[in-house]
Length: 324
Image 1: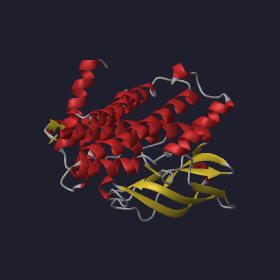
Image 2: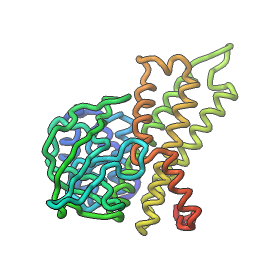
Image 3: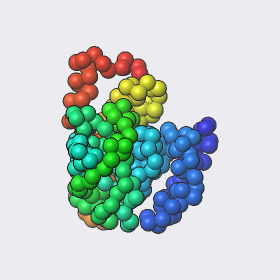
Image 4: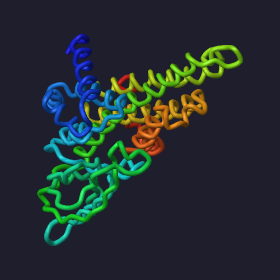
């Protein structure tokens, strides 16, 4: 797909997200053919939609769909690990009749209960994926610091068949890598809007008879955010390049960590240059800040992912820097 085609596709998706009621957004994307685009051009489909989702503060099932398909499963509601954890927080235990699955983590709220769930869990000390039917209550609305994002915690106990275990550590890494890439793109969208809001503010306000944006301290703070924005964009684009599974998973982790760092810089510095305006309910900045706070720890906090990458570095198992 060439540059002009991507630009046209982005414009179309932007219009769909901007003009569609939230409850119909998944349906509108399906009618447009985004799921088919995901099969044919995953990098294009995910990068465009998830970044726009961040810019619009939209809520779709795109993250779950992307992760499930990367793991070779049918579309299902994905049980994400508890916030901050880079490994499954659900556990599976073999019983005489099958497997007991103690589910604990984060899920995307839905108006109707899903028919199938995909649960990363730990079984006999290894990460596995359990793809099974769902019968039970499901959160209808989001909770926590940003309810409109549609994320909620879920705890349950299921009895499943051994045949419902569809993959081991390799499938888990593929699932997590897909989630890291998608979240990184969404966070790039969030951080970009935070930076734009701050730049607009300092360009239109004056202090001591001078434009606010002309002060050296303000320039340095926004330049730092702009630097991390560029790093995050480069890292998210590079995360699609490796073909080796291990290198792809590592590049995806680097993309998520770098996008985390970008939104953290945007939260700190953009909030400061916005001053009191950034704390008001009337200004949009707080909405992006809270969404970023919610997404940063999903599939691993910055600290936990740094520890993981550091362990690989010490073990000599990281790909060459050029591959990242």
